Image (cartoon, rainbow, N blue to C red; front, side, top):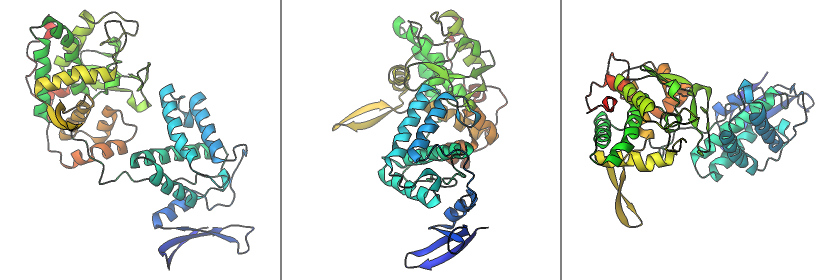
Length: 403
């Protein structure tokens, strides 16, 4: 049985955990923490139980545990999940390098919560950003959890030890306003009906992409990988995406990314008309392929087509680069995803449903990104099924579906 005692000394207030430990002269061991929260997390982690429950002692050091975790991620999948994609594995290895960059002086099975707290302090002092420190510690918790599940350690000493997401230096997302999205859609309409045939032809494809992004909140990598058989006149199924390095199409990063999203009639008409009448034949069944039948690069879509729509809509900002002022797009394609979320929030949709539509693994992610929007949301009810249809706007102009 463990107990927590408050201590006051030259270093100020600390919290001492006393727990039974046979083999010591007093029959007890002690661990000291700066906060009560950390002391409780240490107790709750199970580290105070003497029977360590180690079944497999083949993994002896932290670097070995990290390598074992990476191997499991690649070949088997952790915690019952499927093996990760090549790009995700590459990302994990990036964070693993930070984990291994710390000097782990103790063997794996001897680690306790204070050791993880020291590791956290090291991350905060050596990572380029707080975000990177937080992500590294999160993945380290996953490593320890996997080692505990497989019997390499008796309990997870990293349980409950985190880097707070709260920071006065982190800027909240600021999605485009309803009026700005109206202007962007109107710009896409004008470009699709441009007198220059080459411009009009390019926007025959770009226009439905912008409408789809605003109407569904899909990530750019998701709608650029969208297959024709996943689109109907009322909804779109999201189950694959372009990997971040752009090398291939894969499944969504997490199972939560698999979702069905309602479509507004105008959006459905544009997307299906382009897919059935103008999209180049391609072996991937892409709705928006390039002329060669491959998927578009997200960077090209952002820097060329989407930027052109922003300039056409007057959605630009002036910034200083190398001592001279230039204009650049005020928004990126991903900001239409934030717009979609903001409209769901303003319509007072159930928070769990918002999480599902955004493809977030848990509701905490939704709250971390959009909590400030939820706090100031006003009632905005609409009965129609698609997002753009709910906005009661008529900015579509001449429909390309009639071509």
